[in-house]
Length: 297
Image (tube, rainbow, N blue to C red; front, side, top):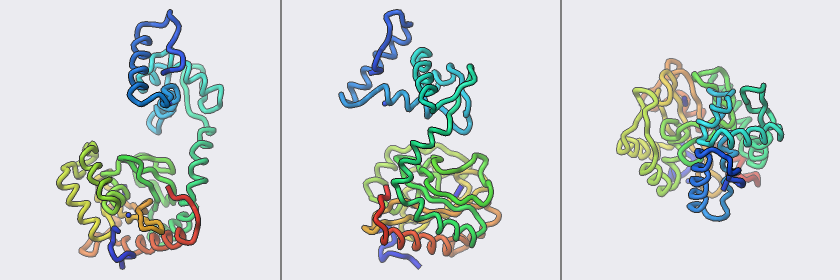
């Protein structure tokens, strides 16, 4: 980025109106594709909602403002469809526009907050992250696993350590992150095996593990020791160490990490300087989770 607690360390949107007959032929093809996709997903799948969300997801930190053509290209929608979705989102207050370019508006945060406020885990973890960052002098985070990616749900940032800004809601590829590896290595075997069969392992730096057999071996090593170290595999110059968080049943529900510039983290036979304080923070979070009735994931 980037003493064991358990006896067994890793025991864890049919577009509703396919269009006027005067619509361009490209839009007609789009409608055919939409119908086929809906047939494949079942009659309960709402294609228009899926496409509206795709419009929202086309914006990101690297593309905060997009033209109509940009959104059309990013989503695969015709310009006519993209225009309708964008103007609907503008009317609802989720998207703003200067007449040419479109951008997301703060109201979108309401959607994410509804999830986070029901999650509970960020509130439980935050004081432990703060103590961990105070002790190490480095940034710390909590993330959950969502398919092949991790999603940050809590964070204490001491300083910016990556070229891209990291915050709550940021998604990163699980295979190249310490938190993703910790959750996969210490989670259910079936989930790990499925991930190794299907995940795209594209190199992010010259150091990224992309060989499936090597990654499986790394998962086994992490599972045996209970924590994960990723050294410059996500971004050059960044080292991160992470450990899984278990709920009261022993299931892996999240992971905690400490990330720092590689030059400030000494790594020896016993691992990173940050392993001991990291494991103490995870113990504290797990202890608090056992004494609260909250939904973790």
